[in-house]
Image (tube, rainbow, N blue to C red; front, top):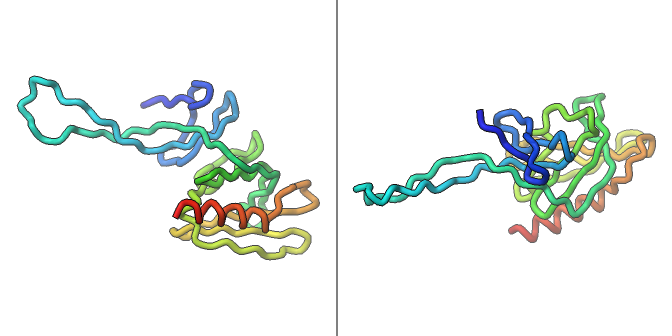
Length: 167
């Protein structure tokens, strides 16, 4: 088994195979796990004149958010997880509170893949549903009862600005 180290502090990262993101248990940094291709140089004595060989590997990099909001991630009909909603230039991520990590794959999305964003009222709360091109949904909730500070219209505007800059 390969050990990955945090791109910020170097500590060992715990992650599940296929996860796009993990949180360092030591420094609390959000690490994006990207597939990279590594070129393997062929020995000079090789008689193979073909192209160089490549292997795929995982490399973590730090998510550098430009915006951060206290928010609630809606998981299922009645379950809400408090944490931070982070927006970088290319990605969005909901970072759960320390003890609510669970499956992080549904809390991460590349901005270029966002297909739709809609806001609706839910009683005293307001929900932003973000859908990607594969139909995956991320539901972020603002409620005065939870002391969240997220401004959903501002989030939609900021994501749209970044999406337009990526195209």
